[in-house]
Image 1 (cartoon, rainbow, N blue to C red):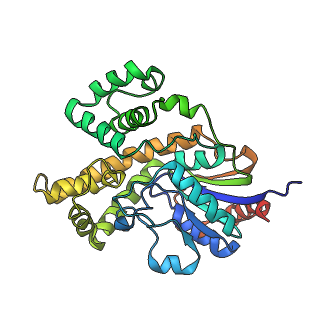
Image 2: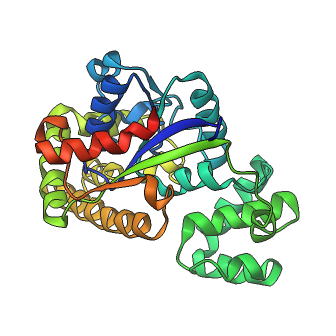
Image 3: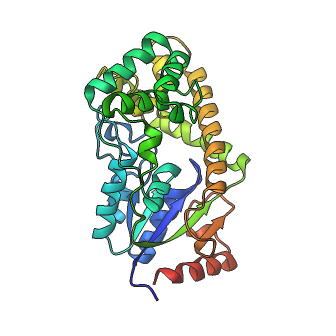
Length: 315
């Protein structure tokens, strides 16, 4: 027997129904839902990131949703510390999201990379803008070959991050990542949603229509009015670059919607692949649902029995 506390992860690709399932389970089990989505932490993007509605948040406790302004980038390290604090305060933590790297860091620890500082971040962005990603990759290879070897020469975000770490700490990111904090003292079970791709594509299309009807375009306009740094993570949320291009008069609204559907669909494919190759819990404590979830009512009697039998481990 173990005296370690228990937690549940509800994970899967965008639009797979994670939030609906987590909400239903939290109501049934008395849980607290803790956000594990990198974009849902930003308060300005409730609509485009499909954050829970105020009515849904009132039904059960929700934590780490909309807690940071878009001008203050979140990070895996920040989220892990915040999530562990919320988990400690919850009777049953239910971590819900599709950011695999966040969930992997929770279970497997994280490298203790110091903050490189504002000057190093500014230098990385300046070099990236002035010289381009290929040149920055070459410069990184000269000073930190171990990290450069892991990065693609077109990966702007990770190249800038690697350069700022080297410039600000005098040590390469790969070197820092060789040191990881201890795994969390929690026993974790995971429910993984893995719907068929046609179901996801249909859900993405329907959801985008609903987002636009709910004011997604106005949400992006309000974000742009803050004149944010284009390198901020929130500026890369699906729909933000596309709707921003429409607001600048570069493309039609229909084209912006088409591009948003495309990039979101491509992202869900990468998410599904990642989850299939990176287990979030032991095999015996992982339950996979090969369907998009809208609530517990959709399950057959047998499916519901299987799910409840799996959840008996929670206690």
